[in-house]
Image (cartoon, rainbow, N blue to C red):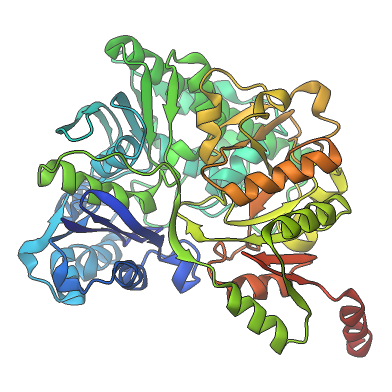
Length: 589
């Protein structure tokens, strides 16, 4: 069967195509439109997926949307009515937003693709998250936990899944927490208060939390409370997201934690105000961890299952993930490369294949590389047109040259093969650098990424040596496969890994198996042979505000705008002409 999965109209729109039960293509709309977190109907992504498989839309057996718009409309309408008369000002805007396009998805999909409406199907939002987490994981039976802002009504679910290659699949969601009580929206309220963009800046809160102390944990527990059934509830008097379209927290929230940060105000944890922001972030992070670890621990005792599959936007919180793995009792924790809404496109397609149409299970390839491939000839042409020298080298020579350049302080834009599916660069669209120079961290934040100075960078390390440098609990290597866990750097290596060691002594580690990214694995080996430590700084190949690069042209543009020294696309290497750049700056002056 040929099934197209679609997520759209909230944030991180995406499309994914499965054929005979296996993924063949998946890409976020932002990677093609170049609009970060693009929520629009993903026509570019859909067209690319179909072109990749050589299909016309009429060849599709089904298109499946990642949630049920009618149920979401029910939730929006009921919430506004319950909030009346306070909600009357936003009622017209909310209705226009829903009725304008989000409610008529079947007709939109049918019209855009030119397929009969009977081939357009829907699944539940959290079932899409559950399927994305469970059906892509190398486990046959697992507990499933999903947590995000909100789907239709659910904000957190627990369930179980079972599958056998060639056999039937079962996914059952057993219980749920419903809107407006939400861990994702709780965390987003702090994101907004800290002046970061909601649905994008939550990872900044996690990074800032390491600079603070949880001095306000008791105040946070006052607004996020545990319930006798083992779940949680929010004191809604501190929030406004259930009453307003463009607000997250209320006046009581401000009275409790102080005035919000202006988004243009620098965040400096070295100042009194900066420490206050960091302490509030640390408090929110601590309480989030407590709640989700407790829920996971209780569910482990209830199910007795060894594996947990975690999905939803909250699964991007690597600090919480690591605590779940250490403390909840599960032997393995599986988080997909795209646990958020983009990944729901793939989850919906797999759910439709296995559950809706009852096809036998097939194990998915265990990698994140489902998007457009880089074209090295395009990079060679662009460099030649711009008067920059480039070279094509045999792989062994190229790897040795790049390892040597990094050892001498070069920052490298690294592109190879298909782009990653998900928010993190996992070795195909990365910026790589020396992990040992603390000044390198500041240089990349300031001169290349153009982002906040407190933001940490990730290390990438071969799985064979990961435990030498990082304190990985049992199962930690698996959690690190898609950079989904934050672990301590071993004290004896922190000085040698200063650029990737966060202020609290931890790092969000990518643990790399050779089979997943062989060329990067060989580069790590070459760097280790030359410099004694097979670890590199790995951050996403983009600058602040831009999506991760997809094509050679986008990589080249970013390379020229930022202060990188080398750009690699498969076997093509371009070096920055520093002398020519200096001459241009003199002319401009």
